Image (cartoon, rainbow, N blue to C red; front, side, top):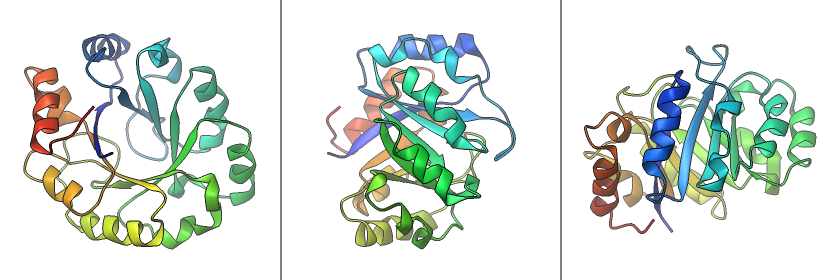
Amino acid sequence: MQRVVPAILTQDPKELKEKLELFQGHTKWMHIDIMDGTLVPGRTMNLFELGEASKFFNLEIHLMVEDPFKYFEDCAGLGAKRVIFHQEAIRAKEPMLSALDSHEFQKGIALNKVTSPELISSYGKKISSILLMGIEPGAQGRPFDSVVLARVKKMKEMYPSVLCGVDGGIGKDNIQSVFGIGADYAVVGSEIMQAEDPIAAFKKFEEMVDLQK
């Protein structure tokens, strides 16, 4: 099932709480960006600010951090449904492979626009999803790079049994192209969260691509 997933990127715990409360009952999935100021510019609130959010959402935690496997235990403790780490953060493959075996949450890998998809082949069946970045990660509101559309098509050919998502720069002018090329889900941040009515904006995206929640 193709799906639109709203995303929260913030440094402000109050804003995080408000957005989570706002979306309760409107979406099953919520994408949470976690940045530590090393892998990408900027920082966000820490994982523990999510509290008991997993009672209301399937949490997809996007770790834009160095040494992402150090966060896995905390993600598991918070009840994360899926945890995504960046290929660009991996310096040694063996510690990550071992960490992936230690937790039951779904494991995803994110790739920046210039990162070769062949690099993830060694993870085998440990990876259940791939998140392709449509922007340089680190901030919401950056322009979408349509080169990611060809990458989606290639990923679906290379790894047909793995979910493929697109994150960054997605708006009303390109979301149909993202799904039309075969993406399984689209992560939408600023176009929803910075709207005057975020819930109405989210539902509009769903209507545009005729999706079910």
